Image (cartoon, rainbow, N blue to C red; front, side):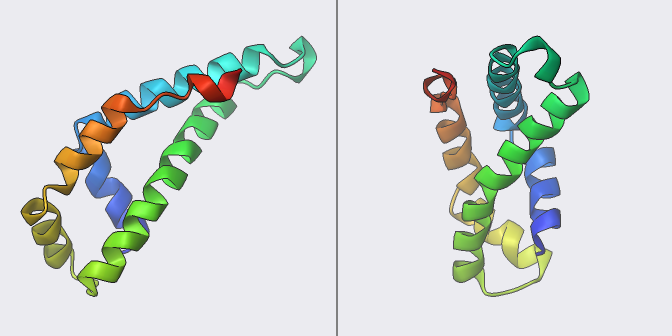
Length: 104
């Protein structure tokens, strides 16, 4: 499974995806408000930055899974993810995620 497919799979199947994006969006909005008014980002740029946090956050998970799965077949990936309850683990981590420390 390629990284882009992996992200799409998570975005469709991971309950915590929306939670992550809401937290990332709030973090980027808070960060943006600290910028001088003339340097503030548009809503679109804030949204892109929030999605970039998502992409970067899932990259290490992807790389770790890739070492374990050793296959490009989507079925191998989904079977492994289900068998090892990866979605549940990631959901728990997202629930505990707090970007606010980084805003200060």
